[in-house]
Image (cartoon, rainbow, N blue to C red; front, top):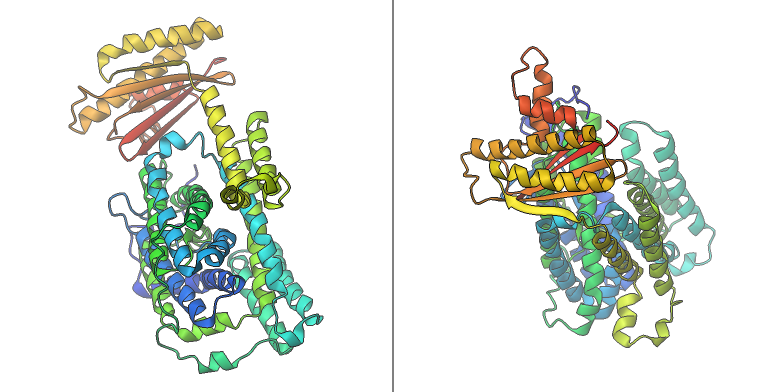
Length: 577
């Protein structure tokens, strides 16, 4: 981890309100297009009228502002405590359209709200699920989502007023929007690159306006301040068959959104501190929970779900301003913009070719992000098989190529969505792999000094079976003892009684290394932070924290993952020394 000495303001620090408000306004303008276009595309594709569309956009802005506030906060298990802006999630476009076509906006609202609750189950079981809902699985689902949204984007490109059907002006507008976004993304540097989507939309709209494709009358008639012309659609609480058929797809995309937020939260923590610190996984859980609560709010409001926008991380890196005050101002601006029908009218007047080209670029980025997630931890044979089979099963069902006609009616709707079919296939295979890889070398002991003997016996059996020499066994033994002593001292140091606490010990082989895993009740201190602190002291005081120095010397890697209610201390030791 590297230091961020250029950082001007950390999250807790308070820049002048003028600076924070200016930064917040700049980010809002940057992400506003994405927030408003997603509900617009969903509404147009599903065939909704103007007033209903205005409500979807209104709800999306309110939900985005409130969700940004939730992320900036840190209330119990909710919130990351960092600047993370939130907006509409384009990954839900295809399933949102299916929901509206099956049961109207009320069904969409119910599905969004109910599926958002899965986020809290996900974070509660996050430590246990980390070997099943891996980045590779999330990447597979992301790529499938991009495939399912692509036909909608292509159809939107051709959605034009009757006089322009078949006109060469339509592909010209698509080309202008796409070329601008691609050119700025590839060749611009620094902050300008972040403006590529907005500049592309403005350029494409200018070309469309020059051809007469834009009707300016609704924009002129819309007031600057007011409420949307539509009304709240309500919620479908009868839980009809359509709800149950679409719910798995909504839940899967919600969980993948949780994986993305996990990555964004880790990134923003790394960029928001001047001095390198271990990742605060309680904050990561809080970020995912805030995402879920924000999407629940979006569902109650009757609009599309939310997600954290990764541009938040890039803005912090570029400006050096990570103060929460920026997020508070930005959230306020998003909420205020919801009460500006003029802004909604501008977005509603956007030609289909511009909106379609914008969404196409979003799904291109989604697909690319999915590829990166798949390769994040390396793609071995077993994981590769699970990922690739899941992808092609999902694609096959979406294209009605895998005997869809032989399925019962409920299964046809359930599996015709590539995200559901492919995602469940990948998760099932990863679950089987996780069971096959489950460690045989494990035991549960009381967290007390007398249990070290049982841990030694476990290690001796493990190293004997692998054929390790005495020196390698001694290194692993010493690392295990020092790690256990750290957990004991951390609990005593926090004024807790270690008696009665249990410690789950697991050993598994990872290449030429051994990975020792201690699972315990929360410890007050973080081993990674403590080891970094000891290293900073230097050799002038060798008597300081000898236990941590030994652990650092004997281990190849130490990770201390502290979640709400449970700690995972992972120690990796090299057999070759």
